Image 1 (cartoon, rainbow, N blue to C red):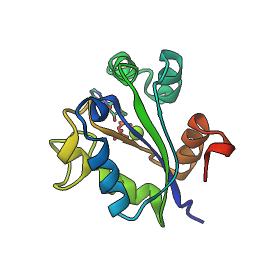
Image 2: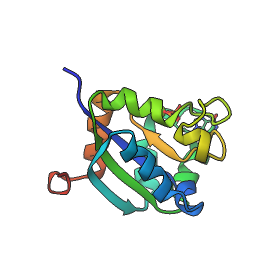
Image 3: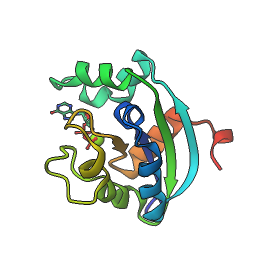
Image 4: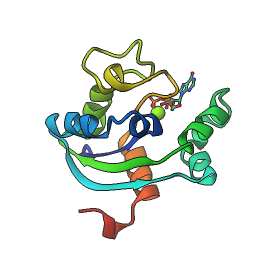
Length: 139
Ligand code: IDP
Ligand code: MG
Protein backbone atom coordinates (compact mmCIF):
# COMPACT_ATOMS: atom_id res chain seq x y z
CA UNK A 1 0.00 0.00 0.00
CA UNK A 2 1.33 3.43 -0.88
CA UNK A 3 2.56 5.55 2.00
CA UNK A 4 0.78 8.90 1.91
CA UNK A 5 3.54 10.89 3.57
CA UNK A 6 6.66 12.49 2.22
CA UNK A 7 9.50 14.50 3.69
CA UNK A 8 10.71 17.90 2.49
CA UNK A 9 13.25 20.56 3.33
CA UNK A 10 13.13 24.18 2.27
CA UNK A 11 16.85 24.59 1.60
CA UNK A 12 19.05 27.54 2.69
CA UNK A 13 18.55 29.49 -0.57
CA UNK A 14 14.75 29.51 0.00
CA UNK A 15 15.21 31.10 3.40
CA UNK A 16 17.91 33.53 2.19
CA UNK A 17 15.77 34.67 -0.74
CA UNK A 18 12.62 35.20 1.32
CA UNK A 19 10.63 32.49 -0.44
CA UNK A 20 9.36 30.50 2.58
CA UNK A 21 5.80 31.85 2.48
CA UNK A 22 5.37 31.43 -1.26
CA UNK A 23 6.73 27.88 -1.24
CA UNK A 24 4.59 26.77 1.72
CA UNK A 25 1.55 28.27 -0.06
CA UNK A 26 2.32 26.25 -3.19
CA UNK A 27 2.61 23.10 -1.05
CA UNK A 28 -0.69 23.57 0.79
CA UNK A 29 -2.54 24.77 -2.33
CA UNK A 30 -1.44 21.53 -4.03
CA UNK A 31 -3.35 19.63 -1.34
CA UNK A 32 -0.59 18.61 1.06
CA UNK A 33 -1.23 18.95 4.78
CA UNK A 34 1.59 19.60 7.22
CA UNK A 35 2.11 16.84 9.81
CA UNK A 36 5.39 18.18 11.24
CA UNK A 37 7.51 21.29 10.67
CA UNK A 38 10.64 22.87 12.15
CA UNK A 39 13.11 25.68 11.51
CA UNK A 40 16.59 24.33 12.15
CA UNK A 41 20.15 24.19 10.87
CA UNK A 42 21.96 21.02 9.86
CA UNK A 43 25.34 20.28 11.40
CA UNK A 44 28.08 19.10 9.06
CA UNK A 45 27.65 15.59 10.48
CA UNK A 46 23.87 15.62 9.86
CA UNK A 47 24.23 16.92 6.29
CA UNK A 48 26.88 14.28 5.50
CA UNK A 49 24.65 11.55 6.89
CA UNK A 50 21.47 12.80 5.20
CA UNK A 51 23.22 12.87 1.79
CA UNK A 52 25.47 9.81 2.38
CA UNK A 53 24.06 8.16 -0.76
CA UNK A 54 25.82 10.91 -2.78
CA UNK A 55 29.18 10.66 -0.97
CA UNK A 56 31.03 9.46 -4.09
CA UNK A 57 29.55 12.16 -6.34
CA UNK A 58 31.73 15.15 -7.35
CA UNK A 59 29.25 17.65 -5.87
CA UNK A 60 29.08 16.03 -2.39
CA UNK A 61 31.35 18.50 -0.55
CA UNK A 62 29.67 21.48 -2.22
CA UNK A 63 26.26 20.02 -1.27
CA UNK A 64 27.22 19.56 2.39
CA UNK A 65 28.70 23.07 2.54
CA UNK A 66 25.56 24.57 1.01
CA UNK A 67 23.11 22.61 3.17
CA UNK A 68 24.93 23.74 6.34
CA UNK A 69 25.33 27.38 5.19
CA UNK A 70 22.14 28.56 6.88
CA UNK A 71 18.86 27.42 8.39
CA UNK A 72 16.40 25.11 6.67
CA UNK A 73 12.75 24.23 7.22
CA UNK A 74 12.10 20.50 7.56
CA UNK A 75 8.57 19.15 7.20
CA UNK A 76 6.49 16.00 6.85
CA UNK A 77 3.64 16.32 4.35
CA UNK A 78 0.55 14.18 3.89
CA UNK A 79 -1.53 13.61 0.76
CA UNK A 80 -2.72 10.74 -1.35
CA UNK A 81 0.28 9.56 -3.44
CA UNK A 82 2.49 12.02 -1.54
CA UNK A 83 5.99 11.02 -2.70
CA UNK A 84 5.24 11.03 -6.41
CA UNK A 85 2.95 14.06 -6.37
CA UNK A 86 5.46 16.10 -4.39
CA UNK A 87 8.27 15.23 -6.84
CA UNK A 88 5.95 16.48 -9.61
CA UNK A 89 5.25 19.69 -7.67
CA UNK A 90 8.97 20.43 -7.11
CA UNK A 91 10.12 19.61 -10.66
CA UNK A 92 13.47 18.54 -12.08
CA UNK A 93 16.64 18.79 -9.95
CA UNK A 94 17.96 21.30 -12.52
CA UNK A 95 15.60 24.32 -12.59
CA UNK A 96 16.38 24.99 -16.26
CA UNK A 97 14.79 21.58 -17.00
CA UNK A 98 11.92 21.87 -14.50
CA UNK A 99 8.34 22.17 -15.78
CA UNK A 100 6.81 25.63 -15.65
CA UNK A 101 4.97 26.40 -12.39
CA UNK A 102 6.96 23.86 -10.37
CA UNK A 103 8.61 25.07 -7.17
CA UNK A 104 12.11 24.69 -8.61
CA UNK A 105 11.22 26.44 -11.89
CA UNK A 106 9.94 29.39 -9.87
CA UNK A 107 12.38 29.57 -6.97
CA UNK A 108 15.56 27.51 -7.53
CA UNK A 109 18.79 29.36 -8.37
CA UNK A 110 20.69 26.42 -9.88
CA UNK A 111 20.98 22.62 -9.90
CA UNK A 112 22.82 22.81 -6.58
CA UNK A 113 20.88 25.62 -4.89
CA UNK A 114 17.51 24.26 -5.89
CA UNK A 115 15.12 25.51 -3.20
CA UNK A 116 13.61 22.24 -1.93
CA UNK A 117 14.21 18.60 -1.15
CA UNK A 118 11.62 15.89 -1.77
CA UNK A 119 11.93 12.22 -0.82
CA UNK A 120 12.30 9.86 -3.79
CA UNK A 121 10.56 6.77 -2.34
CA UNK A 122 8.19 5.74 0.45
CA UNK A 123 11.07 4.05 2.27
CA UNK A 124 13.28 7.15 2.09
CA UNK A 125 10.35 9.33 3.17
CA UNK A 126 10.12 7.25 6.36
CA UNK A 127 13.88 7.22 6.96
CA UNK A 128 14.22 10.97 6.34
CA UNK A 129 11.19 11.82 8.52
CA UNK A 130 12.61 9.80 11.40
CA UNK A 131 16.02 11.44 10.87
CA UNK A 132 14.50 14.88 11.59
CA UNK A 133 11.49 14.30 13.85
CA UNK A 134 10.67 12.34 16.98
CA UNK A 135 7.18 10.83 17.26
CA UNK A 136 6.08 13.61 19.68
CA UNK A 137 6.80 16.22 16.97
CA UNK A 138 4.50 14.62 14.35
CA UNK A 139 0.78 15.50 14.40
P1 IDP B 1 16.93 15.57 -6.09
O1 IDP B 1 17.06 16.59 -4.96
O2 IDP B 1 16.15 16.14 -7.25
O3 IDP B 1 16.40 14.24 -5.63
P2 IDP B 1 19.54 14.30 -6.25
O4 IDP B 1 20.12 13.75 -7.51
O5 IDP B 1 19.05 13.35 -5.21
O6 IDP B 1 18.40 15.34 -6.67
O7 IDP B 1 20.67 15.25 -5.61
C1 IDP B 1 20.53 15.73 -4.28
C2 IDP B 1 20.89 17.19 -4.27
O8 IDP B 1 22.28 17.34 -4.61
C3 IDP B 1 20.17 18.06 -5.30
O9 IDP B 1 18.87 18.45 -4.89
C4 IDP B 1 21.11 19.25 -5.43
O10 IDP B 1 20.98 20.17 -4.32
C5 IDP B 1 22.47 18.55 -5.33
N1 IDP B 1 22.99 18.23 -6.68
C6 IDP B 1 22.58 17.21 -7.48
N2 IDP B 1 23.25 17.22 -8.64
C7 IDP B 1 24.11 18.26 -8.57
C8 IDP B 1 25.10 18.79 -9.49
O11 IDP B 1 25.31 18.29 -10.59
N3 IDP B 1 25.79 19.89 -9.04
C9 IDP B 1 25.59 20.47 -7.81
N4 IDP B 1 24.68 19.99 -6.93
C10 IDP B 1 23.95 18.91 -7.30
MG1 MG C 1 17.22 12.85 -4.33
